[in-house]
Length: 96
Image 1 (cartoon, helix red, strand yellow):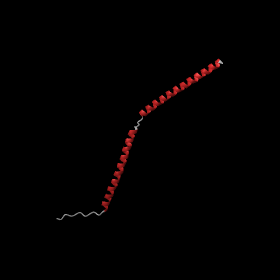
Image 2: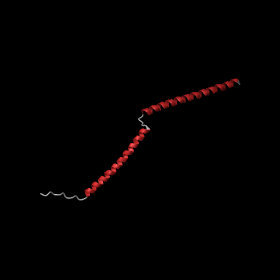
Image 3: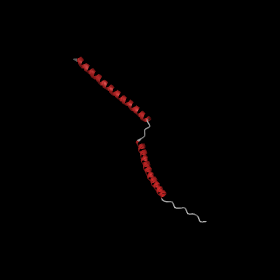
Image 4: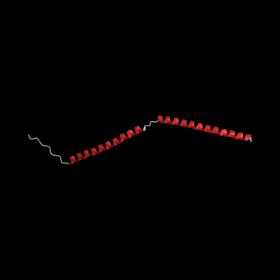
């Protein structure tokens, strides 16, 4: 009976050690993956959220300005087209 209890104790210790080794391997793998991801992100040409928001705001303002200028151009072109459609006055001739 004593040998049987000792065998279960040894098996229990072996399983506990195996679980500890598995946890250690998991921690090592996580550390390696995290380091690789940090290196990849550092090498990637990514922008911060603040930079992205600033550029997006600039793009919105530029689009609004572009639309405003397009409307102004259409208005000026309409005026020019209207002026060209009116009969031109004959130039005054100078009297000798």
